Length: 269
Image (cartoon, rainbow, N blue to C red; front, top):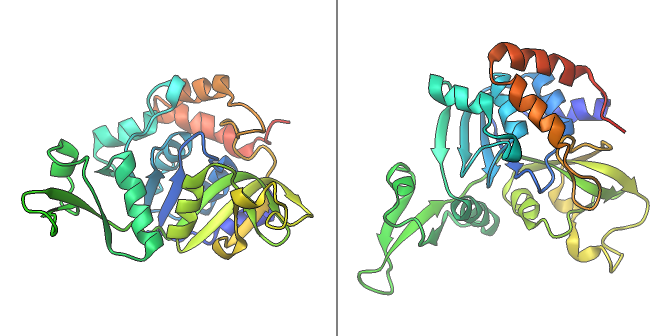
């Protein structure tokens, strides 16, 4: 395993909050192994806005105290088995959310305000089970309630992208949720398929989809670093591998056996 991945993992300390992206937006599976190796526990995971394999593995490894998410599954491979078991056993705390609420919390942090108002939660059971969310009357119109979502300020955001340049600028294309994570987080750790010599901000073809280095704490090159998830414009998801994990991880023993291989194997070419 490259030493720079281990060095990045050491920036995560016990009890931190980590923002992790949805499966199609660039999950840094390459960082999953060093995070588990490093062993910083008691983590608060913020899924942006849903979670999957990476979250399930971190839960199975015993590193997670809280999950804030609007859903958690393995997509076509079914439910997330270690998450489901942890919920049944009461081993983790769940902060149930919605996709708009997660994005609103990140946007509030980005804008430096304590909260953002949204409407769709009014009357929902999700709102009823989130005492940290508030409902107030619209100060500009009587009898018009709005929900307030407090700012979500992750300690660390972690994701995978196609490329970065040598100045630390990262190309994220249309995956604006990755920008929202980086803007809201104290520090952002990124793995990429490749590092290019040209400036991504100086190139008109890439500038609009580039996250400036100002928002990036560290970058490491990790070819096929999203596997077994896919990465837009690069490679497709390995559904067979996701299915294999889903079947194995239904039991704690099966999970341990799968992870023994996962922690030691090389990324497929």
